[in-house]
Length: 127
Image (cartoon, rainbow, N blue to C red):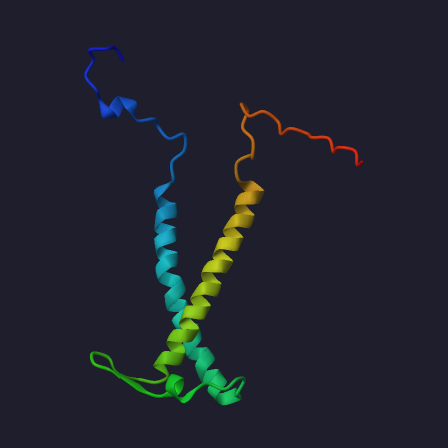
C-alpha cells in the first residue's frame, strides 16, 4: 500500500485460516434448546419419584401448586424449576467435558509446522 493509495478495510482484513461449518452452529443451537427441555422433563420425573420414595425432604413451598395466569395450575413448579436448573448445569458440563475429550483426541496438533519445539530446561543442582 503506497503513500497515496486509498484505505480499504476489505484489503486489510486477514482471512481466517479456519471456518466453522454452519451445521455445528445449528447443532449448538439445538442443544441449547434441547438440554433445558429434557432437564425439565427429567425434573418432573425426579420430583414425582421423590414424593413417592422420600429420598430427601423438600420444603412445602417447593411442592405446592402454583397458578400461572396463562397456563393454569402447575404442581410442584418451584421444585421442578430448581431441579431443571441443576440438571441443565449437569447436562452442559457433561457436554463440555465430552467436547474437550474429543477435541483433545482428534483435534489439531498442539504445535504447527512453524512452531519451535518446547524448551527443555535442566534442573539446577541443589546447594
